Length: 144
Image 1 (cartoon, rainbow, N blue to C red):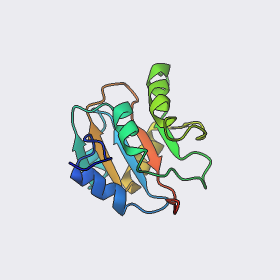
Image 2: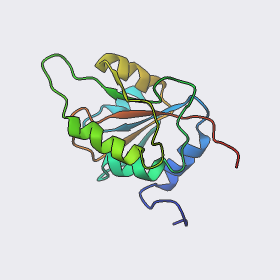
Image 3: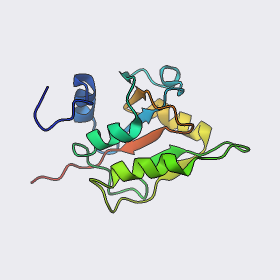
Image 4: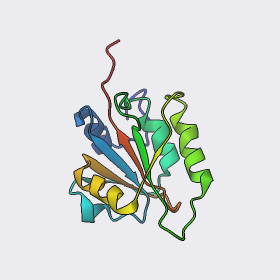
């Protein structure tokens, strides 16, 4: 365990976050996401909710300021409805460290899967909310 780093962040996840470069994406995936189908770099965070993991990661992780939407979630397929409480819960965690971040982009399901193929990593969580997946695009870490 390290001081100042949430115990929700495993050593493997900490390594992935540190190795990512500007523009790389990481997916925090819900428990239903086919992570292994789309990406070979899959980490497990079973039992963790994405909102909690966002609150743990974002103090360590700079979001990309050079793109219109450094955050993306899957859009509902026709006939499905999104639960607005899912995004609101994520934004509550995100705004703790990024109060002025752009709105979350909604990405069509198969386009989301394509982004998963090119993501640096996929973190499989215990999140059970439908359409609970979120993409974080890493930015340039400011020098103090």
